[in-house]
Picture (tube, one colour):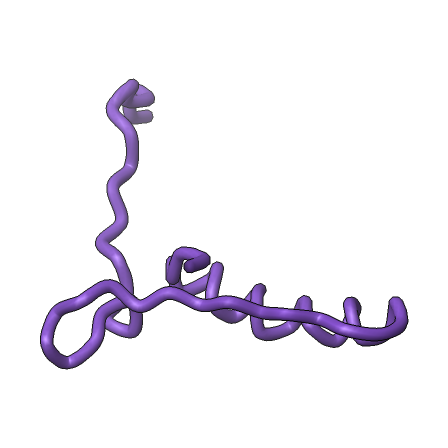
Length: 56
């Protein structure tokens, strides 16, 4: 059995988090209207978070 490490696990950022010229990508979601629109806006935000793309 191995001994647990106290060192943090480092995961490299996704290639999708950078533009072709190396700048960091960001996102902004603006939601208008009813609560179902808010619910629908959560899908692209989750997609960006999974790829470690920070909000802009």
